[in-house]
Length: 380
Image 1 (cartoon, rainbow, N blue to C red):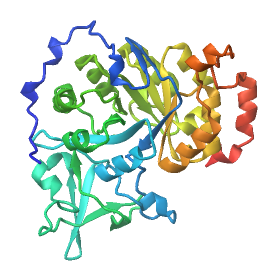
Image 2: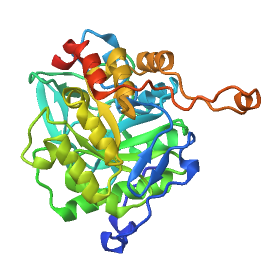
Image 3: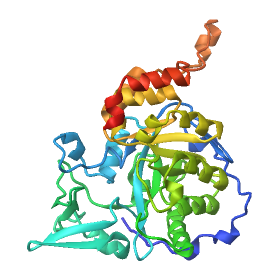
Image 4: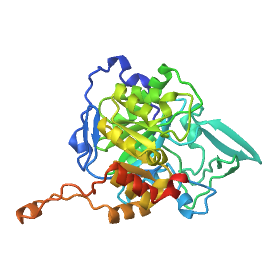
């Protein structure tokens, strides 16, 4: 497959985007009728989103499922698609020659003759990036991929079923077209970015999205507040969500530190929703009603989303969807626990009452009580 670097000059400048650019999505972009307005995003059902495809890799985990398939790969994306997820989430960075690629970590590590080599991903060319890991050509051997764990150890990135690194263009071309893409715009938390740099990176990504997305549902998300505001201004087709730890971690940029700040940023920038660490929501259940009153959608991420009971509680709370690692297990649990509302012509013709909502109605006090039934989840 021929790959090409994207030229920033091919994308309209920020100044060319009108302030009142429409954010209406054609219904064909969402096969199940997601409604999107200037400041709203409404899903018709509880969404399940595969984290980095079929789940992130935790190489030191004793759970084989966390290292079954290489994360952020075409294989992982299509594996998740087999379980009928609504979206897959993945991380996009841009190489130094302007090509959007899919990789989570800020640095890529390899080993040669017992020495560990580290390169910043965004300082690699596309050719250099694709030289790591499995290769397309059987006679080629890629550089061995290593990964640093949270405790500082550098270990071999070994999974049961490996796959090569990929570009954003390849993801569009080779992933099951029914599955939506939650494209996380990945930036380093420890770098203060100039606006011109952010614009050039976002333009490179948008060029690929606009050329290859076709009717695939797309949602952008990012932890970088300025990038969120800019991508919202640069395009008016796809919703933009702001990612936040929900107060579970503290950053220099105060906009990242609380759900209140997240709501404020979304309203000021015309963003459509928030993606919060689920612990932040469980610790402050009242924030859900505040977010909903602000006409914002709410998704969550985090390890607790691999616990079916925690996912069901979120459905009861009115959260719109979850990003999960254990895709097969959570999809099965959601299908068993959450029965979608059905309004059918058959029921209407038979005179049966139409079900308008599958979610029981609970007061905030009752939801707080339900949360107290699983305190071990909140404390993890």
